[in-house]
Length: 351
Image (cartoon, rainbow, N blue to C red; front, side, top):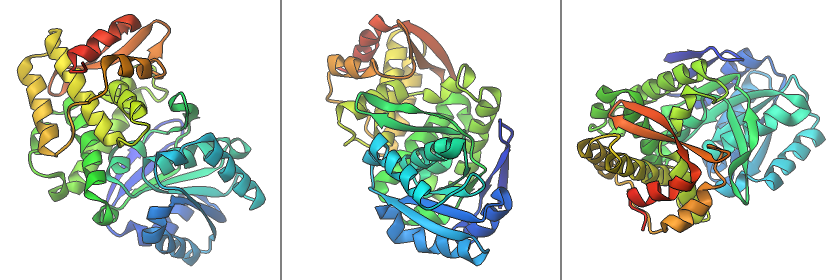
């Protein structure tokens, strides 16, 4: 078992251990002191793991209810968020009870936002079941739902009480989703750990516990330095500004990890073209993404992507903050006039 402590506005542990799905109840009771738990999940995960998690909660005396949303990005909507809040209210959930997010990043974001806002804040535990959620979205307290105009437009910072990462849950993850998590893993290597980047030439699946631990420790450090995303934490957006635009243009038919991979490849190519990094650095990034069979190109035009980027949260007035690689293991935040972003997209390969 590995524990990673996050000392943020609420201190909490990230526990990494095989078999946690069946022992979640004891950890959740100890961390939250709740008498009642509502497990929020999606239809796909429910069929695999919901009963096991509920059994572990009931075994330690927790009254347990469940809320199952649709699978996919569509669950991150104001409509589903409202349905979840009404479910909690009708069920008599109180501020001393807890919500458990059982699923990937979509369920984690939805559940966290509900936990933060229901009765001005109730208990919240992350129990991720995807690699992407294990290494990134379950840690750091970002919660949100989408609007038709953009991704993650309504949300808040709300740290969980506990994160439980069970690598065994990845055994049922579709290969496409697994590769999406690998995109976020590669991001961490590019951001600040060249040795880790090189280690990823060995498949993530052969070193998954080490990979999860390395990524969450790196994210922990950025969260503790900049919990509310005003400075250094923005480095975690590497590939995301252009990636979110790819997602939006596809009406979310392109998965988040796939879009982030495209975004990383685009910003690497643009950085090389503009002299921020060498062509060799850009090629190493693109090559590792391709090694994991992740996309590195998009058919969307620069005009289409530019229109979608306009709704991104990383835009501040007339300025866009792009995370740009300088070398493997070193990136910087570059303020760019928003009017110039279209040129960056073109330099990244958009026609």
